Image 1 (cartoon, rainbow, N blue to C red):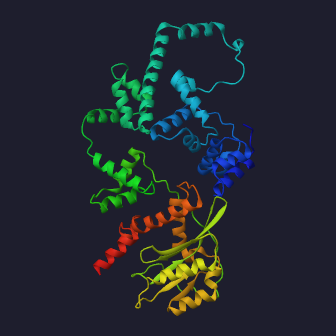
Image 2 (cartoon, rainbow, N blue to C red; image 1 turned 90 degrees about the vertical axis):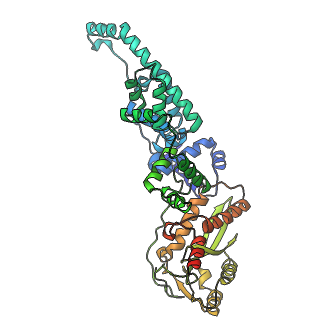
Image 3 (tube, rainbow, N blue to C red; image 1 turned 30 degrees about the vertical axis):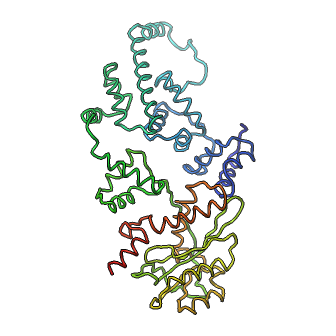
Length: 453
């Protein structure tokens, strides 16, 4: 494969992150393998632009063992591990693993550069060292060590291929199985398992797992929400299902099971502008309300997929964060907002005193929009120019939408994307729980509050 400069690699990553092109199309356009594009993107996600700056690091034996142990402990793939440790090529890890399996830890020792000169050494001393190293006892000890390493890593690799993640309990199990063949002390040192931890697990071998049911339920909730939940939300969902569990225990079990929240939130930054002229900022960042249909917020966001653009216009109730209604269109015309507004009006009751807040987009400055609100007795509120924090709840929803939906799923077509988007918004309203809603989803919270009232 041809060498690529820092700028070329960064350009490839930016093309992918724009959302217009996929791994395959980018790889074909510049004549490289798809796997290389994936590696560059992952490296950038973990280390930013520094991942592509040339580095002539000589990896120590300790660093190599840390990387291989991390891969075994957490079950990460070669590509993911290389990205985490900023190693340019995942094939490097394959070489290290093969060296460890065939030649033991010593095979990972960096080779010294330059020629070796015997003239610098005392021949008599060298002769004695060679004789000592070549003694029968030393050779037998070396053979025994290599045999132990080979037996240990074979069992560990077998477990890794079956379940993906290797825990300390698994390592203790391997040491226990090999205890009659090799010294336990040497095996524990090789496995990196403390003596106390080993004997704790040996004592508990054969006993039923008291948390087996809880572990199964945690994995079920994690899978139901497609990896979007961290330990706090899973704790809240367990409480909804009748299981009162400390969040630290949930965190520990998720770590044991190798379950990690896949969502990474991205912050949006803007600047403070001047006050709008069409309508004042009546909301003034007071996003709290005690009843439905009192404060609504709206905005439009854009998606770029398959060389096309899609626009989403939702209406959100600040009472419970519920998406009242929404429209999707291929063009940002006024009908995108007017249709959404007509649908939202169906939720309003005669006794409601409603305010609708938006940014200063041209849709919300149109006379048609202003007259539609006035005809219903609705107060119009608008953010200051260029200040996203005045409509922070709506910006937060768009951030969640893109982090939990757009960046985590693959789509076959624009139509497939629209269908999955509709499914996600339904999930967001009815199933996705929020801590500030006492562990309930927006719809559950609204219904429960209505029943209590």
